[in-house]
Length: 462
Image 1: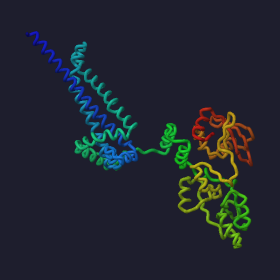
Image 2 (image 1 turned 120 degrees about the vertical axis):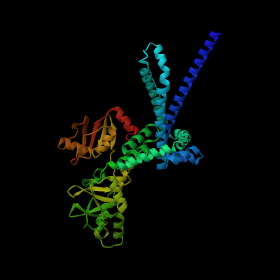
Image 3 (image 1 turned 60 degrees about the vertical axis):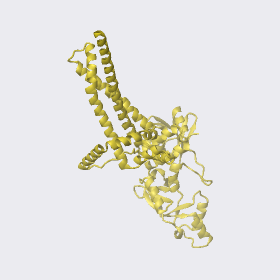
Image 4 (image 1 turned 180 degrees about the horizontal axis):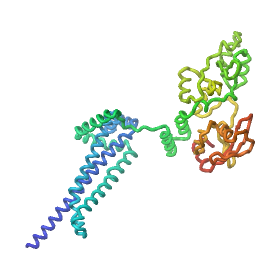
C-alpha cells in the first residue's frame, strides 16, 4: 500500500507539473498573441487605403467602417496608435516578468540534473528563458504581424479593429495619461506632434509607380504619364524652351500682310515680334488677328494687334512657369538668359509635351525620334536632355553646364567635333553621327541588351 500511495503521489505530482507547464506556456502564448495583435493593428491601420475602406464600408462592411473612422481622423488615429503602443509595452513587460519569475525556476532543476552546479543553474536558466522569450516575441509578436499588416493592410485592420476597440476602452486611462505626458514633453521642447500617415517623396512615388508597372498594374502609357508628371518638377524653363536659333521672329514694324504670309508658310499660329534685335521681344501676334486685320483692310501695322508677352528667367521651374502662364492667361513666354537677352521661347505646348510626350499636327515638319535603335547602337538626338538620357540609360553623368547631349559633347571636346568622331563620357562611348550649322543634331551610344530591353519595356523603343 505505501508503494502504491507513493506511485500515485508521483503521478499526481507529474500531472500537476505538466498542468503548470501547460498553463505557463498558455500564458506566454496569450501575451505574445496580444503583442502581435497590437503590432498588426498599428501597422495595418496606418497603411490602409482610405478609398478601399470607404468602398468596403459603402458595401455594408461594419468592420471597415470602424477602421475608416480611425484612419480618417488624426486624433482618433493618434489614440489608436497610443493604445497599440501601450498594449505592446505592457505585454512585453508582463512576459519578461512572468518568464523570470515562473519559467526560470522550472528549468533550474533540469539544469542541475544535467550536471550543472546549483550556483550556476539560476543564472543560466534566467538567460535561457530571456533569449527564448525574446526570440519568440520578435518573430511571432513583431516581424510576422508587421509583415502581415503591411502586405494585407485592409484585411488585417478589419480583423484587428474589434479586439483593439475593447483594449482601447480597457486601457483608456493609461492611454490618456501617456498621450498627455507625451504632448507636454513636446511642448516643453517646442516641437509639434507628428501624424502617423505615410508620406512619400516624388522619388519614392516614382519607385512605387515602377513597381506597379513591373507587377502588371500599369501599362506603358499609364506608367509614362505618371513618371513624366512626377519628373516635371525637375526641369527648368531653359530645358524645355525652343532655343533662339530655332525661333521664327519678325520685326514689330513689319506690315500685317507680310506677317500673315510668313505665318501661313510656317507650322505656327503665333509670331513673336522684336524691336531692334531678337534680344528685345516686345510682343506676339496671333494668326487670327492678322487675318481679321488684313481682311477688313484696317491699319496694316502689326503693333495695333500685338499682344503682350511675359518674360521669365531661364532658371524658373517648369511647374512655376506653367502656373504663371495659366494664371495670367498666356500661351507663350520669353525665356531670358542671365544677361537679360532672349534665350528662347516656352509655350504651353512645350510644357504639356513634357508630360504627354511629343505630339505633332499635320503642319508640323517631321522630326527624327529622340531614340532609335539601329544595328548595335542607340541613336539619340543632340537636343535630348541629359536628365532624360540619364534616366533612359540608368546611369549618372557628371554635372555639366550643358542641358543637352550635344551641349555636353561640345563642353567635353572644347570644339565642334567631326562626323564619326568618338569620345568617352563616364564610360559611355559616344559617336558623332550628324552636325548641322555648328550644332550636334545626332549622336549614337553603345548599350547592352538589358538596357535595350528596359527601354522597350517602358515604351521608349518599338
